[in-house]
Image (cartoon, rainbow, N blue to C red; front, side):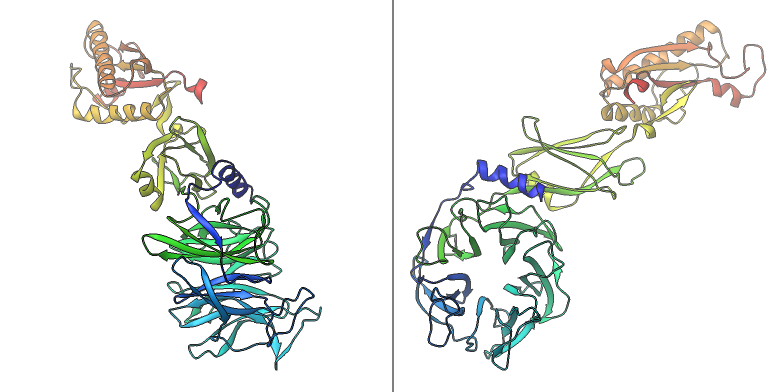
Length: 522
């Protein structure tokens, strides 16, 4: 909740209109009573109204009747005209409303008062709740979700997945009214309700789910909106996983209640939509508003998810730090991997972004992306590899040295062979991952040959190692010095004049890359 709040406070403060050009207009069919919950129906628009009707009783002193579903035509400017009672649902003398038309099923989903034999029924607390049902292609009604103590609102059927979304006030939700879905088989319920989770639902009220081109639109009265109910957009990332809901900004939202947002493609590469609002200047308590817009509303965000992996063990790393930086190098957002080494982090869209991952005693992953590359990396799992210093360093001869497989120079030579180069490339990699390392290169010979010759050849080998590292990207500032000890520091008793097997002599011939500042750094 705090993450959502901070995200939207920043957006509202800096992007009130989200850079969109559009006009929002009060449609012609509004009445002095409530008109809300629009829904596309073929080339027309359905909506819910409380305007008086002969077939409906008045439900309160304001003159509003029990809610009913009307249909209106859309003119060339997208305005709604010629409203009349919708004949596609059975006549009902109590509440019915918040419709959704499924072209795939040729059905209309909507809510209506719980009743039995034509009369209202109540729970033990005297509450009459709203049930949810649908009509078949012949206009016959059937209940789908019914509970005397729970009200259901705003159905939305997604044909591609077979999910039926809705709002409900179940007692085990996150608070108020939450958004849920159930799996269906051609509109028949096949699962228990599944809560959309804390990224979408809050201690407040969430209603009116609507999905368009991979984004979920819904209304919420959480504290970080403009006031009352606001409409938010969240991208659907995967099964029951959503991006941070983005407030659609001033215009589509106001300081009053704004809800029931719908949108679809319109002529000339534009979009048309409608919503309900009780903002000032309307004709009634809730009015329908229309808009024509050039692009999908809601600021574009950058969402990155994946894992941080130990390159030595290929295991995911929990509690690794993730940072996103802007093109000036300023940290925009930071987070951590979870106990499984996974992360997900989201920010408003940037022109360019640097992604970093690190952890105490580990190297730092860092890479910069811009433009199409940013779209590409957020479409797939983004995995970052880092290395633990403990996997690169070991203790030898009472000092910390880089872990290398033992290698040997040709007898009496100091030329870097391919086998030696393969080991020294590990040093190049280690310094690239830990650029603060300060190294000493040590070369040792065995006791065979003259002492002066051994000093000379060991120094030559140490210098050859130093030259190779510097020629392959290691900064001279990382190598404090290189030294040849000759036969001065033998590891066994194979001194001059003592017979030893070649295996024991070879223990004395060695090259060490010593990390001088290990204790200071780690």
